[in-house]
Amino acid sequence: MAIRIVRLGTPRAPGEGLRLGTVRRPPRGVPKEEFASRDFYDVWLPNLSPTAELVAQGLAVDDDREWATFRRKFAAEMKKPDASHLLDMLAALSHQANLAVGCYCEDESRCHRSILRELLQDRGAEVV
Image (cartoon, rainbow, N blue to C red):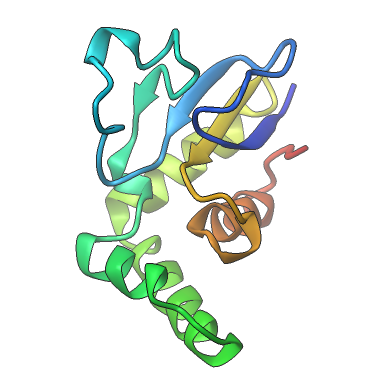
């Protein structure tokens, strides 16, 4: 059992399990009843997304220094109780079920999901 880190809207891997959308906003132009069938997500977890202000900062990142600032701020947001408890729960579930956690960004290395990967691993999650 494990957590897979994915780009939302991409085809699901065999045995991927429940797909969780860690995004601030639902996909534009997609009816809610089609989110799962179009491979976006089964469950929406916006509490594991950067705040709207931080999303804007992340999308504007141009260099490694700005990315480091974004990483630090997002990690601080994930230390807040609601987000921290969700991360703990997902880490524990990763030993019992297959899950996928994702965002829309094309490049995972400049996406908050890369930070979620590290935070989940730090909590002992099985991550592939």
